Image 1 (tube, one colour):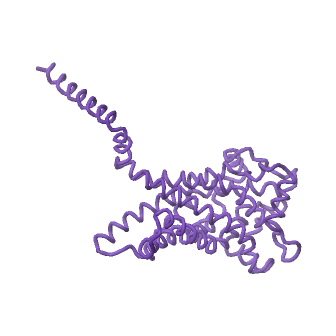
Image 2 (spheres, one colour):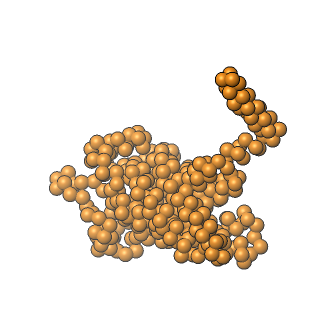
Image 3 (cartoon, one colour):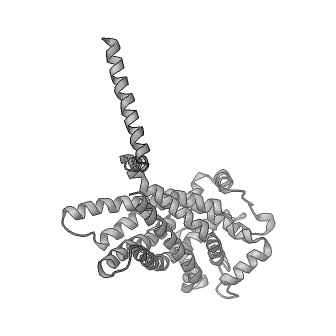
Length: 334
């Protein structure tokens, strides 16, 4: 009797396994399809797709980001004098080292995307999924205000999580501006994280967190909310193909993301780059507002938008590549 009780479940399990294997062999798409539609996988997919999309875009755009950071830090505290351009900064970087110097901080950039973009696109898709369900049950469409709220919230949460990687990226990219004997010469993002934590304390990894969060909220409002809204409007009012809708919507989103976020990105860069004065032990800037006031007083209002062309060339393609890749990954993993 006991033997039969043991044999029967075992036999059923073997039969079930055999049938499942046969189904997978007869229909190769069955296994991955079943895996992708597992509840846990459906929850994780927006985050996985977002991270892969962001890392792909960063690998393409990293040299432009390096030039953007150098432009923001050049002439700090000086209102007049020579104004560097993207071209002169590029020439200086290449002349002083190698072409590969343009990829300084790539490991930090990839880590930042693996954390930050994974979180912001994942949270945004999750929020939008819930908003769509609620809107459908009410017999209406998701409003732009709801899209904006989802973008702002997703950006803020992701920025807090990703700030350490963002800070190490700025430190690695600005290191070359220091005199040779004062450079940290970080070997990798891990080396930078460990050394900054030991020398300045673990909380130093969240320096500039407030402007980073505000910048991320502004960027996500411009990128995700405008992308989602533009795509919805293009679908309703044009005959463009889905691919053309995605491309056009990502271009619109790239402009608004650049315009809204550049001032906050500028302040974030200044705050994350700063180090304590060896003599006084004080930092040049006490916070977001102090930095903004000091820049206006010393360098003028327009300084916040210096390098907008470079920033746009960095943000817009990054936004477009990220959104297009994420859209494609979401499509093939439905």
